[in-house]
Length: 337
Ligand code: ADP
Image 1 (cartoon, rainbow, N blue to C red):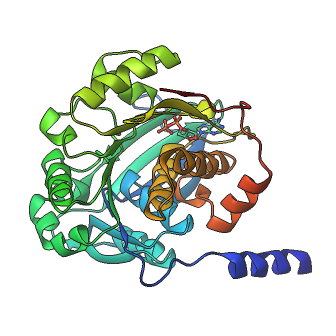
Image 2 (cartoon, rainbow, N blue to C red):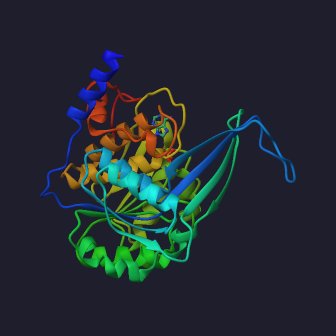
């Protein structure tokens, strides 16, 4: 017990706080509450299954990425919509506990907060229904209200769980102000070229890269092909995340696989979200891209060793301790020019 208390105290003491004067990372996106029931098996239509175990967890790609960035040491502002209900209040309170500025999280008077209802079976199989609620009402007008925050940001981070016109309005505003835009194109959907033109860094996983380009990404040559396709459509830098193998990086300087880290994976939920949050922090601190991707790989690898979405996001101290001792899953980084 005493040792645990000491460990907890030292964790608090070593947790890095961003400099007050640092420009914030602005994350725009969804906030959901995941309501999870663990069951022996997924119930069939019309069936009632007794004996499940219930838990709730804060989620939503936007909120996950905001939390991922804040824990990784970033100063974060979040733009989102929640309902005027208990779930929305709890979600906002959780973000505040992570030190996130929630000034631009609007309480929608007419929509419920976003909810995901999830069955998880003993086999690991799951079944999920999402009611986006207030997330679906995040609007270009909300973006205009937060224009001052976006145009004074270090970076803008967005995903696709909120309406596309809103994502586009935010990306356009940032790009016009010279603020780099990281777009995580998840969940997978095709994107119009006028939106891609505002994107500095696009971060699809292999499935999303395939939906965006029609190219199945299953080896480095095909990753190169998909990245070239996206770069030709206006994206400056493409980072395709490759699960445990790390990430494929293609920019004006060339291409390389930045290897992932070998860990014992127990739950890969939100690995991509933690990756994007940590990537934004490293870039806001001025790290060059390969080093920023290595930092993001480390944060995401740590997140897969723990269960849940936001609960799995590691702190800066934890990422740094891990980077000091961990070895990449492959020994060398090759750069092709
Ligand atoms: P998503 O979670 O969006 O589907 P990926 O599966 O590509 O995306 O994972 C995102 C990142 O998380 C990877 O680039 C890698 O850094 C890390 N990651 C994912 N799975 C593992 C794993 N099993 N071991 C180590 N790192 C992982």
